[in-house]
Length: 107
Image (tube, rainbow, N blue to C red; front, side, top):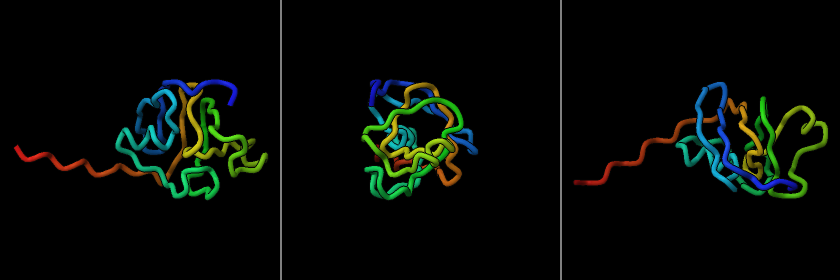
């Protein structure tokens, strides 16, 4: 990774959910912190469960070679579990879902 991952805005389509990615957070971690679950399994870039399409923006990978072919990368596919934002971005993740709100503590 040639640039440090920084804080940027992130939008998940087609739902239109917006959030901020924190410095050093993966896209998967940023979504979860905002109450949105992206598909995932291994969280190390090998299983491909989280594959999504980067419609706008730029990412950097935390690992040297994530589990995508050069053709897939050219097509805009990314692995959010090991990718972090290098600009404001739009991620196409049709299987994203809102997480249930945490229960309120008893007063």
